[in-house]
Length: 302
Image 1 (spheres, rainbow, N blue to C red):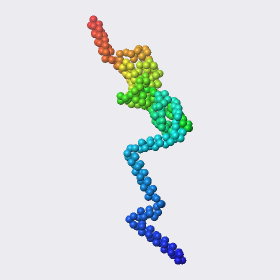
Image 2 (cartoon, one colour):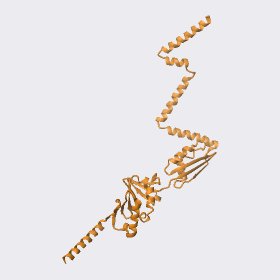
Image 3 (cartoon, helix red, strand yellow):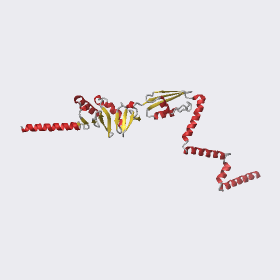
Image 4 (cartoon, rainbow, N blue to C red):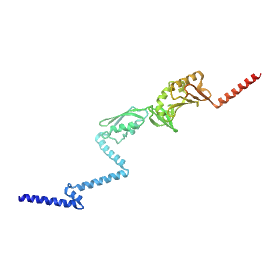
């Protein structure tokens, strides 16, 4: 009994001291002193210092430099260990060079095969507008295989005075600078890039017209006008464009319509075709009309 009473008194005394510490202004510190594991203060201090260093790196704009340095360091170790990329095979390229493909994929002379993320390289390649698809394969210890599917340059697209080279799906490949694309069809206007494939395919079915087209202008994102090499404007209808082109081709074969002294052909109305003469042609027509009128008047007087 005496032993039990002593144990109970000791337990009550410890509980009383614990409650007293909890009631004090420094109860959190007292709690840590009582329950915290050994060396928790050292660990907490280390975490605070690491957090401060990380915050300084981010706010100072050095995160990319630190990340690059760490990546280079581990790649250097892997290269020394025998995982240096010694051979890179690139297939499927047409417009892009071998070095351009590697630069787009982020593969450099410091890269090691061990730490190269094939999925990341593939995503970088597919983000380039020239590349429709890509496959990246690592063959240890030092060979990298890249197979790409390139988009083809389809047309030149002009919008607000700026020229770009586009693929047949409307993707902008690059600004129009290289003269090797000068022979591509020219389409103009908002929305022309996404509708060009079907319209140009239709236009190519009528070589009599297509051979003299300088540009196709998409008007109001709903219909096309043709600007010919001689400056003639052809205003096509919104619907039944194929029929309008067939009619235009037939009129040119039979009466050389597209080479006459006219400035515009309006085919927007389904039941008629309107031709606007040039100023010289209109003036000559008016003079001829007046001359015929005078001749008829003299004949009537006689």
